[in-house]
Length: 222
Image 1 (cartoon, rainbow, N blue to C red):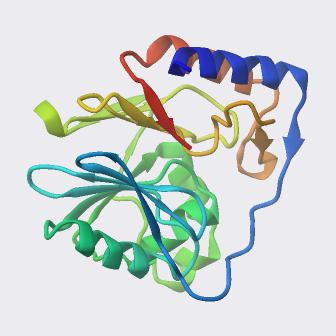
Image 2: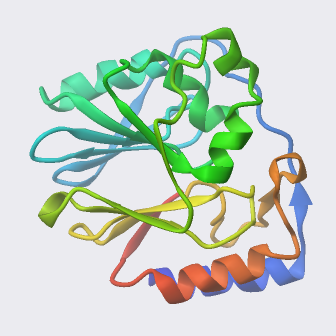
């Protein structure tokens, strides 16, 4: 199924019904990171929260989302098995703990980038207060941002409120793959977090804008 058809289906589902879900608690037990190869230089890491994307570029590694508390180091350890290149960039799709908590375990040399509303939401989270702001974003964007160039180009988009008020879409144009975090749930009912600006009224429009605005993408990581 094409990305545009899949997003169109999600818009129809949005019109059919909505549900609110609380943030899932951190998982206990052994921290096992499973790897799924998407492209030769793009991997999806499963386990410990939201799916993490690992893009191996010419000069370094870009990571999308850092999972639950305690999973940052397992992510970094798994990346070392995939490439000797350093992690240089961490992008969070939104503010939920299963996507941002692992940030605090990443080196201070890593640039953290989020949509501006997500930074505001993250400032309220205990995990960053307890770690003196370590892992907080160093850069933000409002609507769009481009990082890198050529084959290493990464495009960031914000199309409006939905799952939260800061849901970012991360696109790897050369690979024709996007990471949508939790705003795009395929055929499943979308989950809305009102406490962090989610909107059942606006999510349909936000998905429609993504449908129109993201070009030349064949696959979506969620």
